[in-house]
Image (cartoon, rainbow, N blue to C red; front, side, top):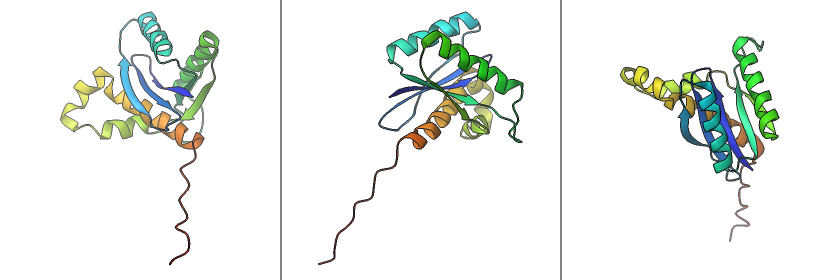
Amino acid sequence: MRCLGIDYGTRRIGLSYGDELGVATPLAALVDADPSKRWTALAAVVQQRRITEFVVGHPLNMDDTVGPKAKEAEAFAERLRAEFGKPVHLIDERLTSYEAEASIPKGRRREVRASGLIDSRAATLILQDFLDQQIPPPAEKDPGPED
């Protein structure tokens, strides 16, 4: 399992990587203004990392309805599936961008937002949630009988 976590946006695409070790790691976000260049860069990451599946954040509304942003993420997920022929998992991402942004000092949030750092941190939270569901935690060792 070699997963690419994605926090999709029309301006930036946050990325993270995770495998069977069960730890999501942020990657550099795709921030090029040209969508075709972002897609080309994404394809390069998929090839370099030998990605076997995608985990895309699904920004549902707080009432569980599908709004315009969730529909954009669904269309992006469908394009990934069609172009790469690999499984795509949509994971509820409500509040991940908020949580990722909260980890940045308030005075630096505007400059950091443009860099894509927050997007990649959000992608890491999304992917970690998926990995936690897929990989069971290690079993605790039975200490055995007391001597």
